[in-house]
Amino acid sequence: MRAPELPTVFSRSQANALGIGDVRLAGLVRRGDVVRLRPGMYAAARVGPVAPDEIAARHVVCVRAALSHHHSGFAASHLSAAALHGLPLPPGGSSHVHVTAVDANQRSRFAPGVRVHHADSSPTDVTHVDGVTLTSVARTVADCLRIWGPETSVALADAALHRGLLTPEELMEQLDRQRHWRGRPRALRSLRIVDGRRESWLESYAFVTFDEWGLTLPEPQIWVETQNGDALGRVDGAWIEDATVLELDGAGKYLIDRDGDVDPWARWRVEKSRYDAMGNLGLERVRLTYDDLRRHPTQSRRVIQLRRAAGSPRRFIGTFRRTDASGLRCLSV
Image (cartoon, rainbow, N blue to C red; front, top):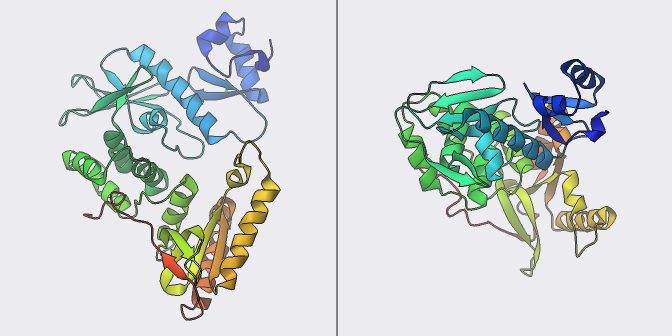
């Protein structure tokens, strides 16, 4: 039996039941036909990069398998709960399934492929999604802000606020409960740049990167209007004081279904027309991709600095309109 005949995601016991022993399974992994997700859990390999939603779906299968072994008294948490809540995972997903013991007698420990957390000093807020017990959105985001750096956690917090899954007050309440827990200072540092106005993982990642570079962060999701008050479009960010706008390009934006039709070239022409029109209003423009940010940081930072230095509010003949930040920012930090 070859890998394509296996389920998309499967366990070692499922492979054994289908007649694939451990030696053959190891051979499939070495050959690249099967990907080892975690100890005892595998996925059939596919050509090309794995889409973010598939990474999350694979992780959810691993979460269900882990909870079936741990039985009652545990809830999916941290990045595993984030996947179940539909919040964006970092590229590559999570190498471990994360569960929290809601029974105070359980202690944190590493099991094969599973990280078990405990919370003796505070009750664990839980909810249920598709029959799975998991930590609430507020608890999930607070935990991720403590445990991981901003490159992972800020996008989760941004998405939860943007989608209305939690409020800044609920998030701050959770962090107040965790006042003496490990990682709380890290969470508060990341919270400075959390902003629910941002609409995608790439936007969150870019703003975190700019902060690491020591750059002033642009205002997110700014409307650009013509001198007649007509809306020309909304940009991912703007350094208003420098009359400079930011656009972040991901391949997905050109594959958006428009009335049942996907036409990347038509979408690209629309984007280019808007980009040119903003230049005609006197704006400086910065356009970056994930690859630019990840692989060419020095060049990308220099481009931002040059464009901002060239920007002139006096030359800009249009107007900016900010997106309302009410309920989307933790301003008390």
